[in-house]
Image (cartoon, rainbow, N blue to C red; front, top):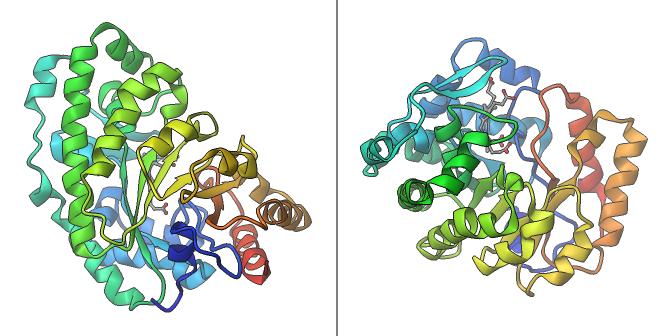
Length: 341
Ligand code: CP3
């Protein structure tokens, strides 16, 4: 690998500056994304390896980040299991056949790798294009977050159906989570086999859970997945919104990196984690709407705070919003790349 900053930081080795990549770095804030999006549906883009590779490469070529992330979505596992998935502009993801009963759970398929072969193919095309320049991150949704989409039938503000399921019918919820966890383990191992250099598990909606429910319905499945990965020298990043609360429990699953939301002071979180676990984060993405001087000041403040720490990857606390000015994102990357400890 020509640029080792990301992998070194992920394995808690010292680096000359923090490495930088951003969640949703390939997306709607980029005019070049729209040139492709206007020709294909989102799922066509994910399922056509050459197009997925083109989109994956946009932030590599236009922003100069230190790691690429495969262009795909966390919901492709739910689709492969039998969810009827569509993405509509302005509405977001939708499963038209939500899971409501044990019979619905029983119908879901777990032998799904052949249906996800397009992801392995896309990884191979991206690795040819990257040609050893920077690492490629693969990913999957965590079982709780994927379950929430399968049960709600789409995005939700309050996760009412998901919470009713875990509280009134924990047997159904555990059966569903067990199936998603089995699929996710196979899927991530397939990505390792296809050549990714790192993996991130996205548990975006863990934030909605109480501590005990997070333990029972999310953490234990992530732990099961991580312990069954053929991880070799592949770092595992565990992300959730809510990590400023759940980070100590997330550490028990033994990821190499925990990605922290923007509510927490990153140094304070780092200090309560076992040594050898790196942190990733945690700029509030809304700062990228602000004036450049504010962007620079906020990033440098974070770097000064983390100056004496090994194992720090710069990222956002959550994904880039579609209406953030491209120029500001580019500027933020430049600020990081000019910094030296
Ligand atoms: O980070 C990257 O650049 C890689 C690609 C990526 C996408 N989705 C592309 C995408 C990744 C890593 C994801 C993960 C994902 N998908 C998550 C976890 C991360 C997070 O942000 O919490 C979640 C919860 C999803 C589910 C999902 N997919 C939603 C809620 C939406 C709609 C968002 C909206 O505002 O409409 C998507 C669609 C999606 N995934 C888009 C992109 C670029 C937009 C699709 C479009 O162009 O219309």
